[in-house]
Image (tube, rainbow, N blue to C red; front, side):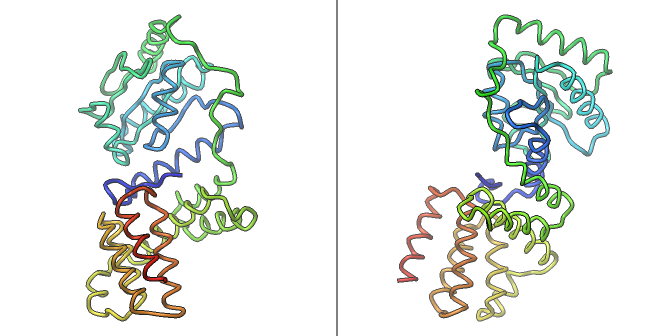
Length: 297
């Protein structure tokens, strides 16, 4: 599972958007295509662009800060659920995923864009009454009639996410990181090799630590107390989140180089967790792993 990194930093808004996307997927029966999806960087390729090669995908780029946008989202969701998969509704949270909003050239919120064959077909900005939305979506479907193949049989559809993740998603949405971590740990107790659960757990652990350290100047504390292992761990978390991944990894590697025993093992485990949150082929990650080997051996 890819993780919510943007330019090397964890995007906490994207964490929430992905949690909502997982919650939506968990509500969908296995093998079924959901009529409404939360589009994120993780699924936009499969659930929006590729899906629009089968049926029209109507994308709303909106924000929870706008009651107008929220009403439009609710109305389009209702229409999509009534459309019998003649089209799919995808919602993009512009606050959580500004890059996706920029990709669609959005200038105002809310904006709605109809995609067909991965290309824009029609769009509008601002709120619309339900009757106008019904007419507009019907016109989109009619414009694509005979030009798109439609949705395939269930066996050809993309599998939905493991429903066992749903309680963790709900816990994350409620800010209960310990409960989410417990769900992931339970999955891993039965399936130690479940990489998705391990990555999700490590992300939840990081979010929990950040929440606990909120309001502290952990970088200043680490500078003032270089021998304090906990201070160095907290500072590395902060650097990772700030996009200073190389500095965060280097800090922990330096601590490992001057410690031994239990302290060294503790720092190594934290470094491995943070490395696992990034793309494995990132040159900074590869360099850190190379130095880790030399520090250990």
